[in-house]
Length: 117
Length: 112
Image (cartoon, rainbow over all chains, first blue to last red; front, side):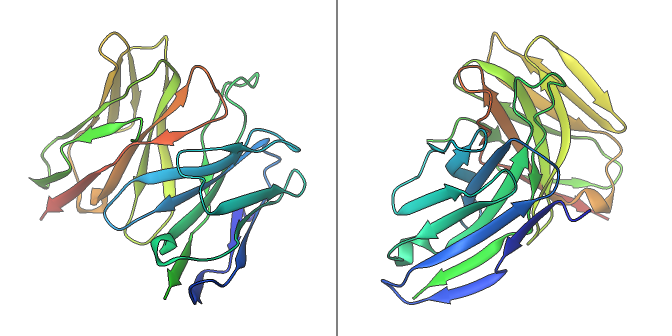
């Protein structure tokens, strides 16, 4: 049981390049999330998907796009990378907050360390 | 700005002592959660407390929630070297039960 799998683990981009971060979960969770974490700081929500077919902006969506490809997969795309997007990116998944079990514990991937030069 | 703000930002204590971290938040919540992050790793869920609960225990962890003050605290008793990590509170807003918003975190160091 892999949980949440992110690829790649490390990436270096040049300013202006594009790339897609991939995330997949095998826990049949409805909700998925993308966060960024800058050095010494907490996680900031970029985008989230409450269920398959829906996506919503989080706290810092500018410069990013997402696709909820199916229930398992949620990708994050940087169309034109900027040095300010250098960060560690985490994908997470959880059941919905209003699910019958009431369990919204989030499970995290191991992160993608992205450097934009 | 982030929903949750933790206090203190950093805490260093002797092994065996208790560690207390506080979290304040801004909007009404469905529940509040605490996570731990070891250096360079992903976050791991520790405990969840619902908005209608006031206190919850899990092993050496004790969490309290005061919705009138919009605040929570995490107490780790009898600390161990392995507890050295960053701790984050996270809130699930009442208005959007699928969102999970994290605070800024407390870096806890346990001195042997």
